[in-house]
Length: 445
Image: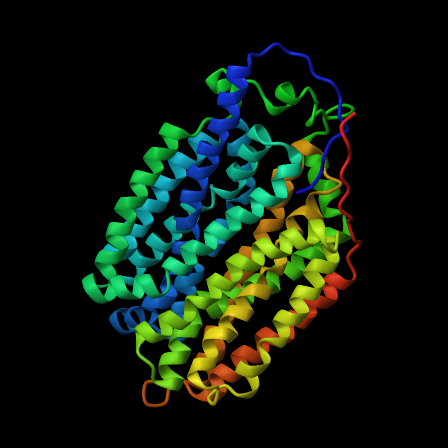
């Protein structure tokens, strides 16, 4: 988010020592959130590695597995607006610390479950708990950092999130091989409880909680001064919903992240194991290249939209077009791609799906500063509704063909992947018709 307010002098006495402490401590808060956000992504995509075990142990169809995995996304989407309200009124420290305890309980319960109902509930608690991390992060950035630091810090956070997805591929498969999938999730939940406790210890909502000056007071610039009277919450929401850009970007978000979660987040490993006959560890090794590419792509597309293209629309548009093209091999040559090709292919797919990152700045620019985090939360809903929908609908497509010798046929995967590629083109069309926002940097007065 690159909105930078007009510089207005701010005079409030503070010592150089307090300023130094503030500028140091904010990185401790940010680092704590980076560590926490790793496990948001880990929980999001971890079912892909244990999908075969889940189907076998609970007797799941592809549709029911899609429902189980997608149960993370529905509560995550539903919690986006409450997450903004909690961040504003209770503060990020309470919000992240408390809800990450819920996520930890859900993760442990996922491993302890011996019935479909229980494991569904565990997955649901995962989604509820980790949903209250991203928006509080945005509030921490607004409270502790300058506006022209937002884009880089946001992209870095998404990069660390993808580190969690990397851990949920080959490393998780290795751990599952050592201790089994149940113990892997149980002990992960226990570790997440420690992370929740550290959030309570380390995080502070704003500099004044530590007796520190704000960046505005340190720099002598009112970065976040809101011109005019404060606009009521519902009026801001109505204005957002009246924006053409909001709905077009929502379509884009729905399809691009839906395909990511449908493929990377659930169906890639069953596809590789069933069609290519590869062992789980090798399939997980391949899958690890997707989040590596995505981590680099998230940072690169955010940086490119700021520094090279200086355009939110164009960065997202060009990226989704190339991303759609990367689906061509798995659609046309579903069963005949050389196994070694999947490593670079998944890296490239992951890199270009990171084109969604400029959307956060695209929707934020033009919003009142006090509404930026909430506007992004309302947009965020569509990413996770898309993730849930694609995991479910791809399962429906697979079940429509049925299993042959306990495997879904090539045609089933081909049409599931075709659905993804075609809808990505719809997302590209939607982005094409958005009104562009340019990067504008205002100088200090």
